[in-house]
Length: 539
Image 1 (cartoon, helix red, strand yellow):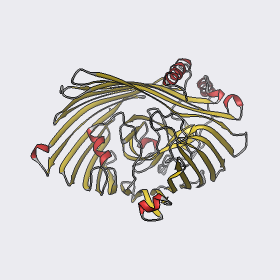
Image 2 (image 1 turned 45 degrees about the vertical axis):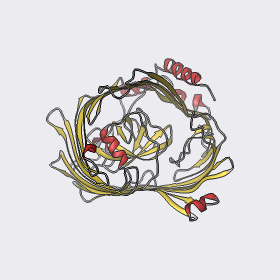
Image 3 (image 1 turned 90 degrees about the horizontal axis):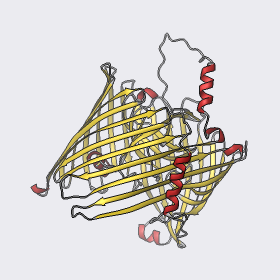
Image 4 (image 1 turned 135 degrees about the horizontal axis):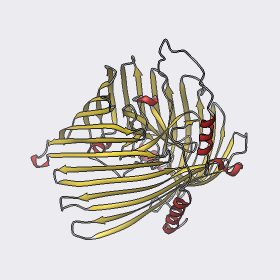
């Protein structure tokens, strides 16, 4: 395993060498359209596509790297050109710039609109496309290089501050230089500097290789073999492993198997402590049909130093039609040896996730779901009082509806029942209101009010956001909120936290994507400023 200094050298050199290759955003994928992750919190993923792009609330989207599905997202809120999502499956660290694949919903055509074939591309369009294909793409390579900087400054004089610069590089290659070979590289490094209220300082480095693999796929053959650090394509809940994966892909089905070892959890280096093996089978609907569905099943065994770590079966189903949207994930643990004694049964159902959406009419939609997943690794660099609240109340069941009225307005209500989890048993009810394309500036407005209660306290959370497109590739959003809690145990435990901030993101010449976010939080002994900036170059 390369050293930390070696990882950093790889990233820096790649940033210098690859900074001249253009990349087109928003191209059509093999089975849908492609958007990009624009912002991340601990439990929410924001993407640069919305209702105008054919996305609806409750849709399941796929985060892809190359042709691999690494995570799945469920749309929880959206505007005309933006959408916020929750992570429903996947155990890899997501990043700004990751591709998100979705199937656009077909809109009802105007009765008087004639049906015609699109005109052939003009000569100038062909020339522009050929110009964009320069760089590394004709060689079968694509990816991104990014620079990020996060700083949290304590204003109370009693807490700590820190700054965190980071670099990351991702390269995906198929048919590299016209051969049958491909490659996948995902390297990230960051350094954190802490300053404590006492004046003491400390620094730590974090270097990770998430993917470093080579693949072989003969031209015209359904067989593909990958060797190196990777994750199973069809089983997004399988952690990163070092080993071999082989899969046989056809138009309507996919079958595969993998074997390998898990990286060391402390430094992400190679390790033989935990060995993992498994197989999977996926059946898909016809890509040309209006109804999209897929069913994936598999078995995975994990063993630590020769002892059973975990053995489980996995089932995932997805159904997408104009009125219905269903997504289901279920894991079933098979208990043998010490696990049989600990669990008290041979089979244990775990990590259930179900999401259902039904569109009654063009203006009214019902949705519901159930979630008792044990743990999913999430992106933890940025956290606000609102996302911290959503994360702690993730488990449970929910039911709600959305009403779209007067063309530009939406009203939603949902109730959630939580049993267990980090916050214990609790209930919450939320009311949301949204408006889009207001005035000639096409302003989007979203508000939310949530009442919640548990064994320890009752509280209200109110939040808002106002956004608008400054230009074709630039967007600004102002947001804020307040969270008040009344303790059932002691008056001195009452809390009141407020926050406000602004986010600006914009694209430059189709290849560069930039983001700046500032937020101020205060109240109940908490007072800090948070600044996050990132620059991503896509080639």
